[in-house]
Length: 620
Ligand SMILES: Nc1ncnc2c1ncn2[C@@H]1O[C@H](COP(=O)(O)OP(=O)(O)OP(=O)(O)O)[C@@H](O)[C@H]1O
Ligand SMILES: [Mg+2]
Image 1 (tube, rainbow, N blue to C red):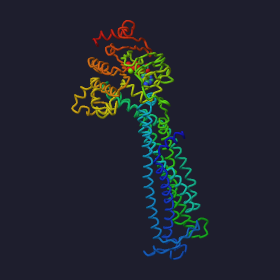
Image 2 (cartoon, rainbow, N blue to C red):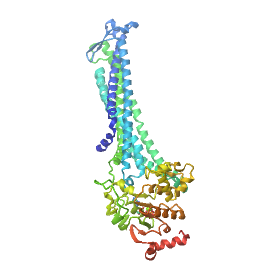
Image 3 (spheres, helix red, strand yellow):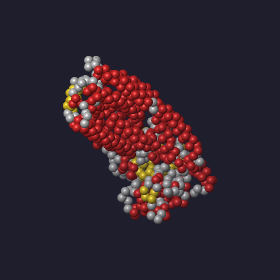
Image 4 (cartoon, rainbow, N blue to C red):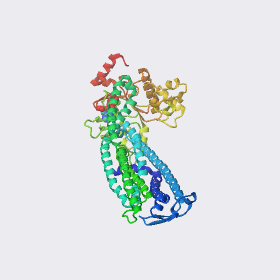
């Protein structure tokens, strides 16, 4: 765990100076606040002429009768310390005001630097996480789920930020305040200060019991909170599906149950924590009553009997009250930091888990920067999504595709079509065997070069908010308008652009929400064409396009990009029947390879699909 905390603390970086300077400000604030009650007691004692003149027979100079008396220097005697100071009431008052001002300044400055340090750290942490996530492979993302990554980048980072801010402000201040106050209490009150030695362990033990009980519940709640967060994110991102299946009531019910359970736990925990305050108040009251009761008695006795064993003045008693409050408050603060820290440990663990995750797919040591051609070869490829998975998503795949060929892939859902093509551009790495592109193992290429040359239009492809142009430029940042037009013409997307008054500048909403499924698919294909890849993979990418347009797209790809290897996954036989090669997959294995005519003769699965589709209504 310490390793993880260190990793998170590293993200303070350029804000380190603020993180160091904050405790220094806090140290000065604590020091000043501990000196002030002492001076206050001197002031009270100096002004306290009644007792000093009437009973002690002290020199008349210590009395204050007129305004000018407050400027007169008088001796202040602290008998516990054996200290004699020449003070003026006016001087003491000014000093106290200056000290109060200084303490305020330290507090404000400390607050500002603490905010700078913690906000800065959170910003760095977020950007580190973001960078890390960008380097993740599909396998890494599968491990965490996108929803959980979002929670880690937002809620968890905020928790760590708050804990860090508390830490640098209070972790030094509270213990110091406690120690200083205790020392000063002994200096000011002598034997009387032993009262705190008794009270501090009592309150500390009480707080410990309260916190221990509440923490257990809190940790449980946080785990549930996480689950709730994830389910909310999933639900909100899939809100359209929820609505189309009229599942709102069911989802509401599910949410309410989860939320009610949590509320119950939270209330119980908060109820327990709420006991903190009465406990502190009661202890402070007890401390005050004992200090005032016992103190007054000692003051009275020591005044009438100068040989009395204990000595105390009114000023000293008042400072003891303040020190008592400061000591007890510090104990409370220390306990709160502990709670905060323990609670943020879970957030730290979750953030560190992402930061420590190694991307499963990395560039090789001496990468190849050129893909010679669009040849593809699968050699004895087997693939599992997780090492621990029982079943292989693909097993024993052997397949050769020549540059420029048009290859169709067919198979029932879950047969491994997507898995097969995702291996070519290294979205996942093979578990066994190897895949060659342009006669080189894909693992030897520079990742960017490989992915630029192997364009995949994913089954779940999306457009991003911006304009049509900005989306197309993802394929090629320097594409000219001519090139964009050309790409759109090939895949029948130009009619979408032309139908919009702003053409290429038309706005695309988040996730491409203002385009239909078929329009999105065509724009995604255009984006891939702009990359000028040597291999293009369409994973069910024309499923939402009518058969006529589908045919035109295929013809466009074939005629305009003859050099490019085209792999098309399709549900409709009509989409692939004119392919040079058709691969039929079944349960992660190749069932048959051949042309349409060959497969109709030799492959049962293919024949079955063909007849069923033709019977249903001539999808041709
Ligand atoms: N990210 C993943 N993690 C774990 N298992 C997965 C993952 N994606 C797919 N699988 C499993 O791998 C197998 C093959 O899935 P794949 O997506 O390749 O099928 P497919 O042929 O593309 O299906 P469809 O026609 O429905 O798109 C399935 O059994 C599926 O459950
Ligand atoms: Mg698929």
